[in-house]
Image (cartoon, rainbow, N blue to C red; front, side):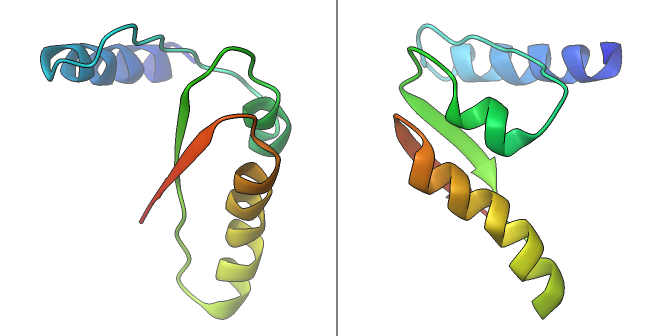
Amino acid sequence: KEENLIQIEKLKKGAEAAGIANVEAVVEMGSPKVILTGLPDVELIVCGATGVNQFEKMMIGSVAERIVRLAKCDVLLVR
């Protein structure tokens, strides 16, 4: 978890340097579908959507699809 915090802090500083205000960096353990769709007071969720083969696209895509469907804010999917 500490390595994740260091990486997230670098990304946070990069976002702030690019002029994005009020950046909050959080590392959570658990199901991304549950954690990301339950975040309060969030304006944007950025999450990856990748898959190498059809099976992986179906499995990984289901996580991204659920986040898009259930999140209470805008969601940006990145490949």
